[in-house]
Image (cartoon, rainbow, N blue to C red; front, side, top):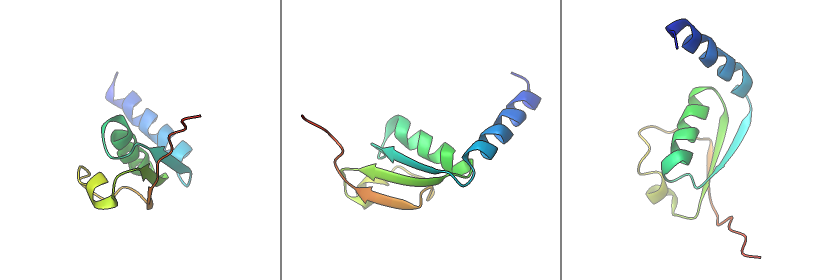
Length: 78
């Protein structure tokens, strides 16, 4: 993909995510962590949800990329 197309794609994502709210579960690691960082980069308001304590869950983040952290277990065992 050319650099021009990458820039156009980034602008499109920024326009779509700007001022939107993203609720991300399982936010302490893996794909969810990467998504949270990208959504924040593109202007979304990010709310992270994980069952770990906040300081432990956010240890892997290099910078603050969220608006609020909620400690919760969203598992449904029914």
